[in-house]
Image (tube, rainbow, N blue to C red; front, side, top):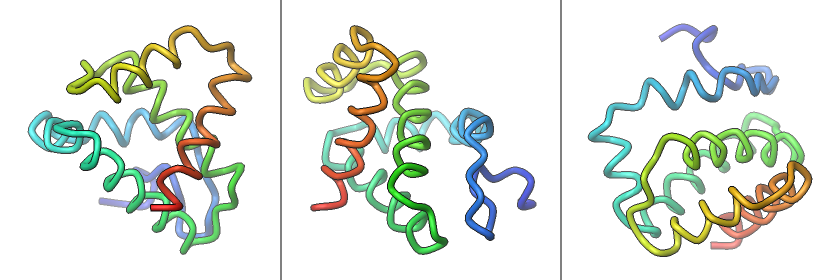
Length: 113
């Protein structure tokens, strides 16, 4: 896969518009595995955040990427457990600013694990 397919370039530049494309490339089986339970979702998000931090993304860039992921999941994925359902409901009732703050909190939440 070429770098042009990635949402984050090796130089640390985040391209938020490519996050949805990257998520679309995840197979349904893999997506089910990620969303199977809340711990696997947190683990997946934590690995992605750690990788992004290693290539130099700052907290704001991480929150922007997390916001894109959360928006995609809220629109396209059926919650598999009550934690995911709560996150989806919070996302759906939140304003754009509240969603951005929730994305920051998700980054902090999985980063402390």
